[in-house]
Length: 543
Image (cartoon, rainbow, N blue to C red; front, side, top):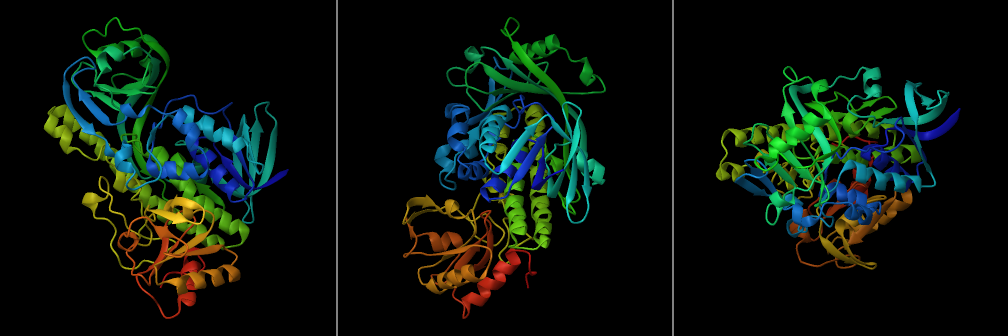
């Protein structure tokens, strides 16, 4: 019987990110994957800015950029009457365009796919000294003993063994055996809408050059309606169409039928197009969220915890951010910074984000249907949130959890998706601003990773001194910066963006979310910070 502090089931983007974040925090872990290798399917196409920020910290962006769709393809979402037909309209996807995203994130949007992403993540995870990634190893049972977790594993040879773990993280997909074994329900919307996705190679340039390049090309006025998704900007594509399983059972689709589907979606001229079909797979749309993300020493992440409709590409991103929220908390518990009550905040915080993501995906699906019913450029232009999701991405925020609310309201519903207004209200992702440090130029996002961080206004040096004392007294690392001394902002906007007077300060968690904010000076910053840290570590309830 082997032992590991953390065992992770599933070597997809979420499981591998969990492993990398735990490794970065110094926590040994084992990833078990029943497949022979990483995914071969081109799913989960969009890497949103917040996910890119997380992966940038792990050093993954250069390799991911090399495997991403060229930028000239990501500026628009296009709606057409057949790939070779007239244009209905186009939506400028500002959340995918560097000139827009650079204003609120140091990391870019990237358009890549899971097969490419998983290769990068797996290679990085395999390099970690304190991590193991084992393919062909299937989790067949999990027993929570109260003091640990017995994880039963079956190797490809049929041999079985047990790992004695302290914690078990289930990143084992939408049909999670772990979730089902625990009897955790998945309330929400289970639609009857089926979709057939495919991966193929074809030269479609005569219909996309020179000015019909788009991240998504929706075909809405042919006998078969669906979507084309460029993967490399040359000849590699994904795409698909919805279908009624009562009329066309999933097993009725053949390779030749799928080829003909795409020829029909091309329209006139498409009948002789050569399509090299690599693979295809049917699936049905759901918008469900587990009623709990934790049961004892077992925690659910990614698709095991929520099934987000793919319209808008936020499902994988939501899962990666689950991992980011969970990893620092799990590390804090294992290292003794916090009691395991801190892990209860993981579900509190991430369930509400998953519910927003599900609502976003379902709304986008309705939008496409609306365009189909009324194919007018004006209708397309009015549906802004499909391709414009900054408020849902870098505007990610929690309304309850491991932080101290300060009474400021969360974003209003009408701007919570397509607009982002930077805010350092407790529970929100701390906003990006460029600063100069003794080590050079950096984004504030880069300051918030391996411990707690206090950033104080120009007259707030008392907060910084209190942070240094707290660092000496607390097992959790706490660092402090004073504007004008330790940090120099490039533009005089920090106070406005962060909502601080010159004597105020924020305490930011290792996942970059604000745990506490004082707009101005207080009489005893050491006591105030100590209480805020206790709440952020789950040792105390917010007053």
